[in-house]
Length: 426
Image (cartoon, rainbow, N blue to C red):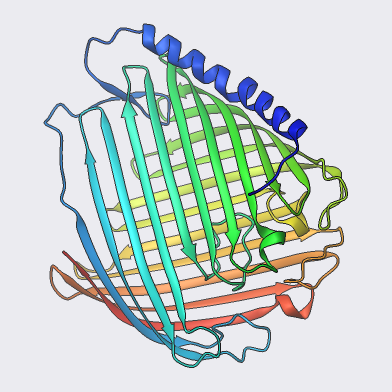
């Protein structure tokens, strides 16, 4: 169990009540006093409203997808010596189910898979299990509630996970859950209150103490619909990260302002800028010194949708890295680009590129990186193609390249993976 001193807990509770619970209760009270008659509606992210489908509740059966791949990994251990090449095979099953009523919509997806490496000295089996759940409920004409669950147990590096290592360091469990309430106060003004819980835990006893964390985050945002296609936003968030080894907690307050813009029927994007204020109350912990930091904040995304199977998306963020012990209070830059293209009715292709940079000018004792002044650059690109043989069966082929450059020889490596396989959906 992660321990936290009494005074840290009391401070955390006061912050949660003042920044999240009170505004959320106010929204619920106003919502309960609102008229319940009339058509049901959902509050959409832009602050407007959409009528809920008047038809009967929809039910879709469970969709089952079986996958199987075989390929070659020239550095399966992500080591600097690049000496761990191996053939591999993988298989898995995915179950997805969408369900709901006129007021409520929900989507559930689960995956369980296993990868076998034939030429490795370590355990040849790598697990990959994940679960994703999203729920949206229209309480009345003004209030809507949303919730999501994202849980993963795996071994391969994942660019989407905050604070995770960019190299293999044993199996790890990641969980991110959120709940939010959106309330439409006026036709053009709405507020969004959000609570997010995050957890990262490595199985390896050497890595875990330096990377494991528990995160509680609260956010309050106000939105103003300036034009039907333009929404202005302003918000504040508080993120609290704690772990046993840090012997305390870190606190990051963020103040942001932004705009959400729709350009035509195909292009939309958002931009948020602001400032972040980081502090930690570590009382002589092994991996982190007490201190504060101030940093600019930037986050943006663009989405261009041509059709159901053709789209281009980009996202980027520059912020304080509050999750990893060796660069807590340092800087993190992430950006990613993804293209999905339907070549013909049967042939489709996807391509993605991701870049992540950690930097910190303070010493670190992270044995996984073996470095003092810390900086790390990670780049990953994936290209894949699919051919639909028939309604149930598709053939797949793909290539993935990963390169990590870090201070210290233990942190740098390159990796190439090639695969061919199939997927069958019922």
